[in-house]
Length: 271
Image 1 (spheres, rainbow, N blue to C red):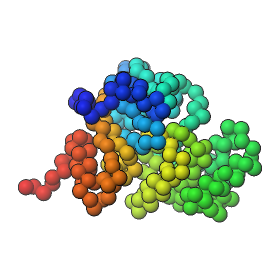
Image 2 (cartoon, helix red, strand yellow):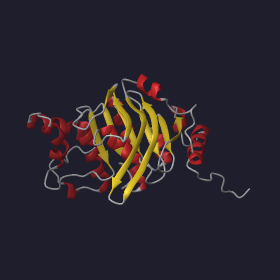
Image 3 (cartoon, one colour):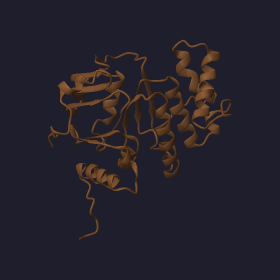
Image 4 (cartoon, one colour):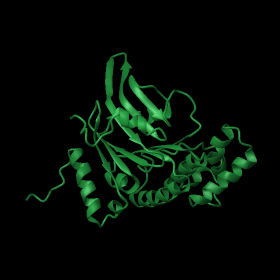
């Protein structure tokens, strides 16, 4: 399906958002011994500074590839990825923070050192990094757990540590790859609410990959709906504050709109 041109962002519009993240006519294919696998096709959209964009789409459509391109971990086959108007190149981006589905904690390090590791890697003195780590642990509700080890934490607590580690860097660009997918439903709701509050601290630009449309409505300022592979942007759905009320009509409309784009039948009553 071709992108809806009245809903998506042109390359010219993407360039105009020089203070944020922009994808301009991105196409990408993975090359292996058994051939080439196209993943993305002519993807263009922009995320303004301080905005949260949630990307949804079928499994294998290239959502995580978009994150890798934004992080500078790879270059697209064609097109440009821009951050603050500049082309993203492989290498270290000092504005970048990342959190993943699995928190990836180092089991031999204390929780405090896990949170501080990015700060010390960037050259901050250990005592100052430890102080900032403790402040971030308090922010995510883990005050007093600095001397604990990952094996002593629940899944939800470990996920908080992974988010604290990303946010401790005070990133201007935050990339999230299904960070709440591995926890139970109740913990997920709690983490979503906490994360929404944390975003108010520094207002980073966020690219958030999820399979959960409800999560995308709750957290996002916009939902980027991707087509099956090779993926293009089917539609960009703006989310207003009132749309996040699960009991309100706006939430139902946005949910139906996103699910229909994904080919999910929303009227199952049989009428």
